[in-house]
Length: 611
Image (cartoon, rainbow, N blue to C red; front, side, top):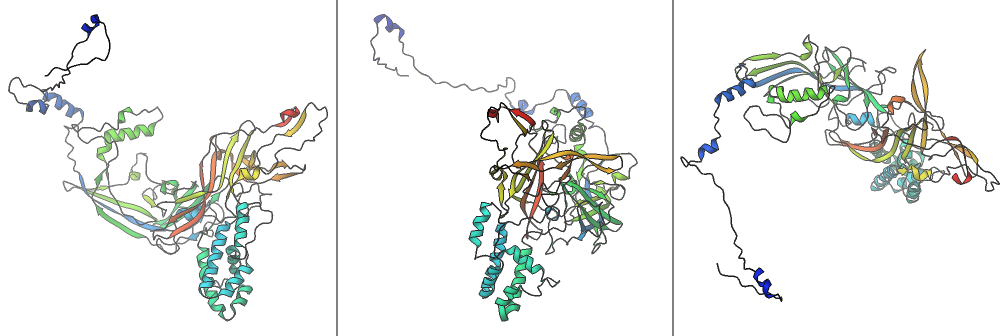
């Protein structure tokens, strides 16, 4: 390697020159290879031979692989049973009144008026239809009339049914839209209300409102056809529920759906549905109540032959002893306490019994209840085995992934429910948002309206903005003289905080339970007058049409736990099995945000500067 010259741009002493040396840079690499000292063959090192075959036999004995079970693998399974569609629906708790009289027929899947089960359960008629929909429906009516060259009828509709808001409303969005709609768009809700009195009983109209009929003149029949077509469209824009399923005292929905099998009726009872996505595990099976005769029994036999497939799940141990395991899941590292029986059962199934289970796929009709009568399996040796139901054994056992039968468990143990639910539900921003929480210092439960529908527009309005316009303090004289303290009967709280007081509700003689009853709050205005503040929304009312001034909502005390409860109302949309969209307003219950503190105190005496 040639020498390297260095030039030093510095002045050094002669004795320091000996410290400088020429050090060449030489890159080096190292390579390690196995060396076969005897044969020079690398193959034995890659074989990983076992020097102790007896150890292998011991491991096979330890894993019970030496025992011959003479068991074949299932290769064919035949399932026979019976299925029937859900044909009757009862909104609300079925123990009240006459269930059959209060029930309605469920349309068959694929029918023009069919809708997901969530729609029929959650949908409610809003107390105030959003002004946007009233304007949209009215504008569409004028478009249809003008497209059919009925300009006079369209003008008469706008003049006869103007958009009118509550004079005392302070909703900015409603006032702006009223100015936009004035003289241009009719109120669609007002038109629908007028047409409801002219219904001919078969889906048509027996006439028209006088103003529209006079403007139509000789074309009244043609105008009536256009208005009837519009009425059908506007009535189906927001789904109209068959009844009220919301249970205000429990903050949850309740309903019953019924199917008719050949050996009797099957009722799916759901008493604690909180909204969202509905499925079979939300309810229980029962033979009562009877919701009346079905339009058509429709019970059809089920017979299907298919190939059983082994059960597989993420992190499942390998079937054989000598297969490499995936280190991503370590079931042996799960922590379980003495009471975690479910967790221990899952781990034991995964480690010891997971390779012994097979699943048999079965295609079922949408929206049906199916009873399995027979399961026959053929293995690789040609042996046919009839598998009986686990409910037929005399040994008490348990069941998972099936609806819990109520009362008579024998006839319903083999029934599986495939509810006519929506595949996916789109939920809009809340029209109303109320949170319930406990205030231990005040010994109250508060219902706080965070978002409410506008009094005129029906659009969501932050309740705190409305509450900020109201004085929350008692008026105090300007001249306090030489007063050292000021007595206050009650400290103020925000206007949108409404209290619930614990009271006792007697169910029968000598028995009762505690409930939370909503009470109004007293507010003082700047002029010294006082008024009672009531809810602006519908969640804190017993029903959507209740009078807020006289209504007293009662909620079971156990329904507001320590973590609180949040209830929202929002527009929701889903598609039916035919692809048609359905729009409704529904409620959803979620976990709250814990306890809160209002600072409410009574009988306080403070210096003037501390107020």
